[in-house]
Image (cartoon, one colour):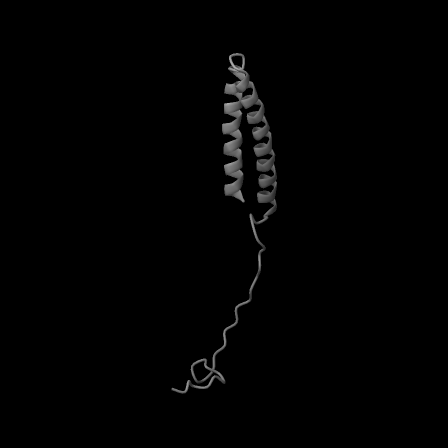
Length: 90
């Protein structure tokens, strides 16, 4: 979860810098204005995802799947742990 949080936070920063750069140059071209709008939207989405990843990391959640706990048992017997298993017939 921590790796995903760092990933989202970095991309949020990258898209924010691209949005600011596009917004400062938007007077030259209308396409840069559209790029700035979508870059700010991407910044908002990545920042929200980073926030939720951070909260999940602090709560101890897993990134994917479920945590299953398995109890290991050791079985041994006098004949080398074979128990009631017959020898293979060749």
